[in-house]
Length: 425
Image (cartoon, rainbow, N blue to C red):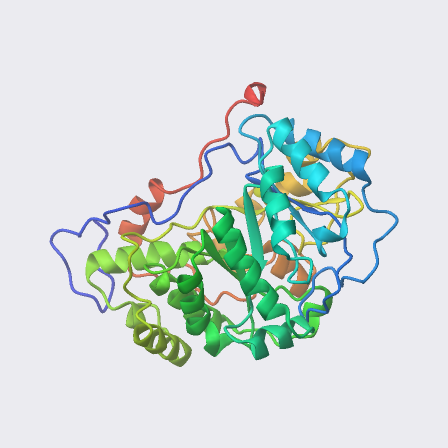
């Protein structure tokens, strides 16, 4: 056991961290194949979302991958081997593509699991959702950025989106589809997050994803959270994980929080004091308790998955350019001219992003760097360097008081070793 840190009592025997591992690692070797491939099938979308990464437009771009090129992309995803990465068709609004169903069918027949992430528009009809389901889509991802129409529609720029989204959500659930709800965390809805979580619990989901804004596209005009606020929100999300299966997007330090909270619980320590949580956390926690979100039917929390830009994750744009993330606008090839497998496995950008030794600043010194790594997208957006320290993280490396317990826990939760390259098939 580690030596007691200053200010905490010595324990003769450290309490074990029991239950599910606080962080899940990917089953496949991350240098060999991604866990998920996101394809921006089009930038056409009738919405005007305040945070839009793609700065979507009403019409389709003539440079989009056509049907045959899209099928070639699906073949490239299948070429990673089985199980193939999850292939998510997003946009813009993928319903703007008349070949959407044909591509879902093709992917399913090729052995690629296909999910669809449409925009909340009038295209979200019961017949369209039924057709997507019957074509073979394994899941549906919808955005909900507030618990009320005023909050959500105001953020999305079009009235009626909130109602269309809820109706599509309930329809998909009745069809038996797995539904993920994505919520952008920004200043417009910070204090509404408990109500949004309650709505998610009420309607039921496979997963609630809290997306922490990256200042790209239209999102560069929105006010950023500071590191203390981010820390407060991440701990609130951990709390409601007993009621709602929660994950984060572009907030990779949620994995650090999960490890810290598991250890603090085992040690009987006060997490508010140990992690220096602030007034925003207390407000969110108090409201979550009023809504009975901190205790719930889930016996265990869903452990966050160790995925990051270029490390288990790859994004293909509407024109075929390949990026480590949709929020990291650095391209390293195009699927029209170079196989996706080769770009992901061998390009300098992707291999560098998988090397924690490349991280700079506090991220490079941090004991959590192998499991967190920070948002490479936000680091690039703020500093111009994808290896810079995470701007929305205030953790000082080495400051967590239970370093011995942390090292022991991370030994069972760390990233797996890459298997030999010849075993790709």
